Image: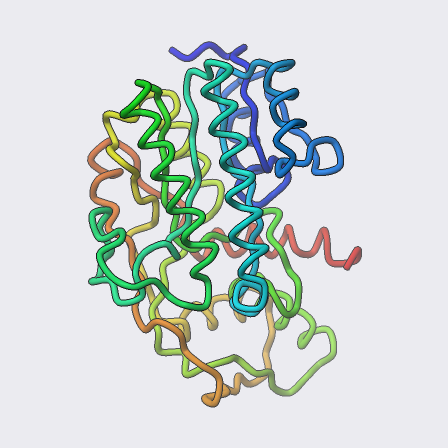
Length: 315
């Protein structure tokens, strides 16, 4: 049984993932959770991070902080995406070792898999082919984080785990009209179309690619499950976390439209790119360890839309 007074530092505690992990830890009765805003602690500043770890001495560390963005941002600013993410994760992982952190959890992203990965994507397919060029800098930084955790485990006997989530959505998502991910972007677009009584609204692409989505609170449950019950030796280099279920974008679009209550017509702009046609995680490894996703997409979208409505007046 894990000590509920264990000092836990969540890097990125205000983001979609970090806030979900914080909620899950609190739900399970953990009372000693530390989080710092960017204004309080710049994670790219090695001196500031070293001082923070020396002062706070966390026992568990969850590395959910990253510089993230859509295709446009990643493609336009590869230096910033690679450099900032390398600095953040190197500072956290190195200072975790120096301050004898018991357990560390590093959060990656499914975009680290090669562009033409066989489906569903198994953990061993990492670095088996070329990466997608548009977010290569971000993907390489995340791969370095996984490898660094693995090397620390091998060389120094640490207990650092890495997880690879699929596409996420949920409470506290980014609803920016241009650089949000597909679910929050469509929630906002359909809501605004409904408010303005627009007869039709546009969706990019053909709607045929298939995608897998996971509710962020399900990911949080998986992370806490692994922190409480498993060690790095149980999961290997890293482990996929997903729903194990995909569906065509067109069906996801219809579900969002229904959730928001938009009654207009959908027009697919086929001049816009579709991206990868198929992207599904192989989640047999995490399922065998005793965890499965439980939130259905319809149910998760309903919660996400309620969260959007609470925040929308502030946009």
